[in-house]
Image (tube, rainbow, N blue to C red; front, side, top):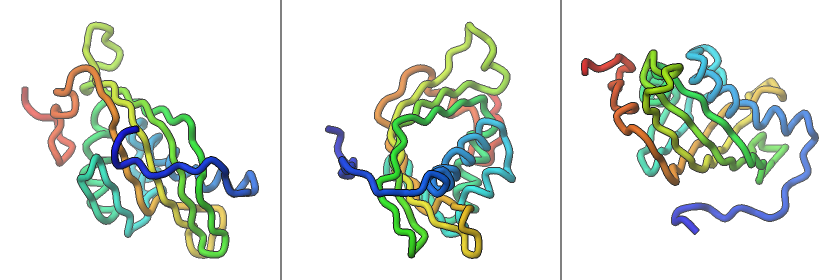
Length: 172
């Protein structure tokens, strides 16, 4: 087993289906926002006090996450595919939940996604996500904690280096 991966429970909490969908939705909103370059959708998914960790690198606050994740990755051509998604903790009174999922993410430089001869970067990993219910709205949940553990990658590492931290394409 890879190090640093939390215990994943065998049994799941009982959650009404509509609530479970609402708990999962902010992860789908965030990933779809990146793939479709939709900043409003991304903002709707991330809590203002959220924390995002990528293999140990920590970003704190929605502004930092937007700048270093959304603004960068949404500028390249991507698709993120979630599977094995499980809500592993749920506290109805506190309005919190945790989930785990596996992810495959394909990345290409801008304009190269449809070019069959271009090399992309494919990565696989695990998401560990804590979500919180929006105050005053039982149906809206936002990401509060997001830990991404990349387990493997193959392809052109330069795809991710093709944009700088400001999301602008670098001169090559």
